[in-house]
Length: 424
Image 1: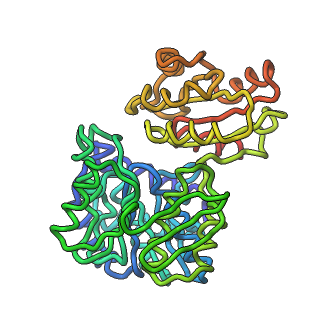
Image 2: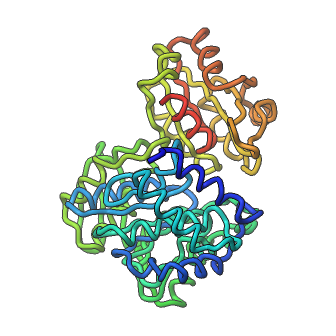
């Protein structure tokens, strides 16, 4: 089987609709019907929406379920290095053979009708999940929730809404309440929704939606609590207390994400073994990931090299908190961002923890902010900055002057994916 075959099909799919993002479910329902409704043949689904922490929360739920011996499907987006990363079948990344087969079937069933790339590839994932036995299926929302292509499950086992903040305003609305309303669109009648820490405005919207569809809520600070105490995670809900290791994923914000995952696992009847596995075995690339091997790591020499794909103000604040907790080292950022993001909002929390910033353009991305514009934005918020040709040259510039630096490559999941491919 030609390993590039799925890439060719994906390229053809890009031409099926002129818009990259066009929020509606009509095209998805049409294709699912043409495929004899694979969404009705899935194992129990956990559906996860939110602005920050969706992927981390999913990773911890998955680790917990797998620690309990369960077979788990998982869907996430975007991918970092290869499209196959979006679809995990019963614990393993989808094979090239299986991916090509479901893409071909969806392309044929679509019969040339207009449909977005995300919609048809999400349907392909659902089709793949319907063909392989598993105990649970984890679906991460791509954008928003109410009109997201994943929002086609009538009766999931549970829904999750991680912290909601301003992002993707051009698609979801200009206010926190409007964005929260889109996220809350995944709440289903009578189905438990686990809610992570929220601004009061967002929580009001979520609670209103839940009340209208009579969905029970498990809300952070009301029904469950997760705190860091003496380098342990203490979780408490209405059924009791858990004393667990801290999450393997770095950062205090991961404590609340872990709490949401634990609330879901307890709702599903998982035991303490599963809860410990959720903390100790979760892996989520490009979320404060330490790079220790590969050509970029070699170029860094004795410097620490880290990678993070967060890209909004809340992510910038979380990174700032993490960097403050790490042992002191002169910290430099290598930053590339999309021109659709709140660049100053992301960078402002980082100005007090970064010695300097090297700006890069994101390879292959038409929506990249130029390196010079990214550097200008950093200077505007008070970070010493300059443009660099690429990530490797930025690393070399940093270590030539500060060999013991801490280097964080950050600003975009698309940049993170480029780095992971380059660092191979």
